[in-house]
Length: 245
Image (cartoon, rainbow, N blue to C red; front, side):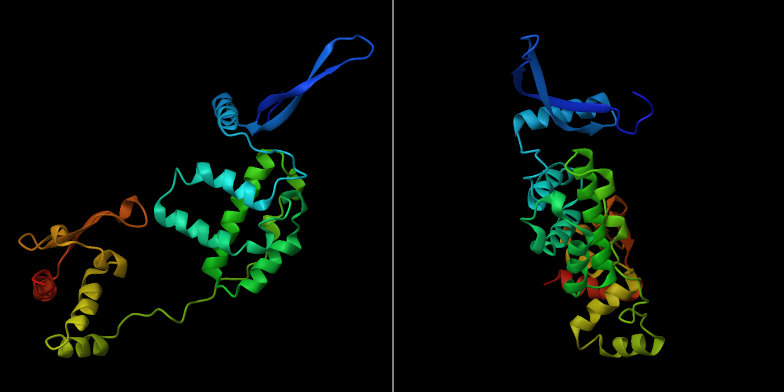
């Protein structure tokens, strides 16, 4: 009733008791969770019936909650994103076997402080934790006030000093070496195409059209990464060289 974000409750019969006064059977329930639509609640009930799991907040661990959350999540995302979530999960080894309801901000902060990871990695960790805690809240493993991830301090993003453009003099030097060193050719192929290293390295001969002067990126970090990339006239001989091998 009322204006709720998740008005639909999925529940399952836990057992029956006899009322001593009326001698009538009384049904007891366990709550699987609260959901925004009737369909999503029915789906959660169906998934629970297919693969029952312990919803007792006094027993379920962080690892178990992550497993249940990831079963659904990993069906919806790319392999690279799955690997990213798994990498974040590995940082949480110290709380794998903790009861989820017992996890405090200090435990999460200790993971961050001892990880030795940079800001982008910690940002991914916080995103993963936020979604796992969302799942735990929705399934009443914890109450809303125990959703503590927003208070996790991962520091501030610093300007990277590892990434900078090649200068004109550096590019000129690469060209001077390009005839005698085919690996220098690869650097120039990257500079003049603007693609990620992995995108060039994963390209197959069948992805390259020398006649039309482009190569295709079959897949990348997202849907928009799939594209045709023009081959610069100056680097065309390098593509021919590598394709001849």
